[in-house]
Image (cartoon, rainbow, N blue to C red):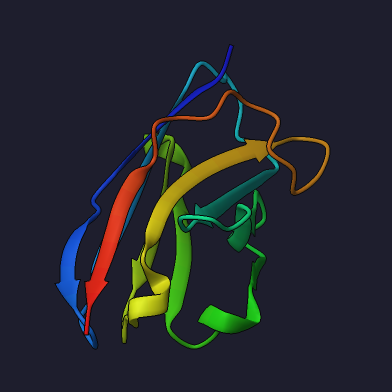
Length: 118
């Protein structure tokens, strides 16, 4: 069973940067799609960024040019570099993945809180 664990969130001022990490365990092989999601209070969970095993990436329009997803397959980790943060980026950030497509196939982790102050 695959497990994910997110870390790296915190409180940052608008315009600042954070780097989130996602540790993946329980999978003997690289996962075809890894995705970062976020959920703000009162809103649905949304896709933020995704990366394939071949390092192709895709981003939500709201974060293009500000966020960068990357992975270290040897370390079973996925990262989200966030810069030029805005108050509307405040949310709990989650990672998940799937081999069949960019869908959340694994059990959700606890997420990591990102709060951007204005």
